[in-house]
Length: 190
Image 1 (cartoon, rainbow, N blue to C red):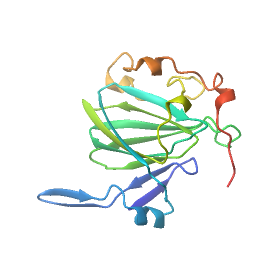
Image 2: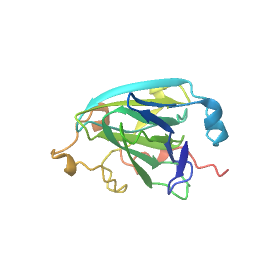
Image 3: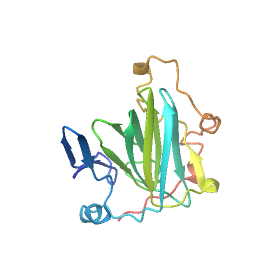
Image 4: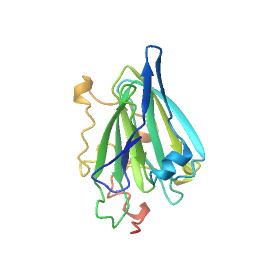
């Protein structure tokens, strides 16, 4: 397993070891001891699976005060995955990391607590699997606007040949980072 650091501390790309032959492949998507030995110990308590069609954009979501970290992977298809630092006072506040995940590279993306998370589907369909280190709490969920100009995220929408993404009603009501200012988690230096 290879752990790749990104421009924002704590946001990681993980490349699990893949074993393949003429029959197909095998890989461990998670093994507690191996991840702990790599400094990635998490008390994962919930697994989620979503299926979405090309052009679907989910996010940007985060929970506060009952935060939730995620270890994400694509089982089928391809997505552009985004993590945005929404921790007030963080030296990387408002910055983001982009990870292109698909069923060929088998990469995983670790999105820590205090980050908004979102994805856009780049293939005809994508099955997106993620482990969470806290239970989903609808009362604590916030939605950051996917197209907040302050964030400057390149979702790759133009490359998909569509006018705009397919959004849920909830995601259409997302608020800008400035509008969420009083509802953001605080950065706590380690």
